[in-house]
Image (tube, rainbow, N blue to C red):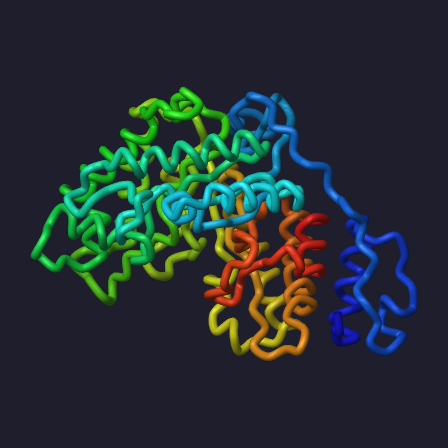
Length: 404
């Protein structure tokens, strides 16, 4: 790893402080030219032992807002992986097994993944163009839950998407209002879309897994139902559809629907963590009582990230983390740093620079008691479509994920 002296020093210090390296020698700190990466231990953080309990949140007392598992404090250590349904649909259960194996080896055995797929020809598609459930797709989701359980992995299931990738809001509007060309922001208030999404949630919560015979509502493999990925309702685009409470009302209705359907797991928000931008106000979401877990997507909330040098990004990220931590503390709710990664604008050492920035951000998150789920891992050999894929041979980055 040919890392710059500054990046090498920061990374080595972070790994040493977290117990990932045994010694900080002169070469590791940049005293020798072309020094290699720190000698990283095989495992830095003990794998999570899940047992059969659901993760719960304390509602009262001095520790209100703290997550618990089996009566002990729980802090989420996870990772994102979005292609699981597509891989099952492509006849690649081996690739899903590989992703879960990677997560376990990283000691990050909580995987955040979509439970929606509403576009394209995949056999794992969950709803057709009319909004009807597809049993073949539901069986694909059954397989993912069963594979996760076999690997000692648990899941955060995302129920819809603000963006058009794989379906989400725009696809649902086409289901309920074909030919009307409704803007995406209608999804958050159109009664037809609301009812269809509530019906979809209910069907998942009440489903009996065809592989494990476990009811989804009771399955500890599901740590949380996540309402939406990066919900936005931009008033400047559709002033008649969006106000500062539109997403709050939507979140409360979806959350109430999940509980009414019998869901016993946590309900997480899934938003980027904006404080009034793009129609999302994390404070209002927290105050509404709609969710058990608040969320922050760090690369979304640092504007013009590509133009920032690594040192400036570290500072901007720390400020965002501390600000959102104050919101969560005031609301007495847990906060997950759910999507976080760094893509160097120009660097001869993509892995080393990314590891340096991630290490700094994850250290701050840990000091604030946040759960962390970096973006993302995939099956071995996967194309890096967005520049954020974390590969098993990214030694510096995977060392940071194991140890922080």
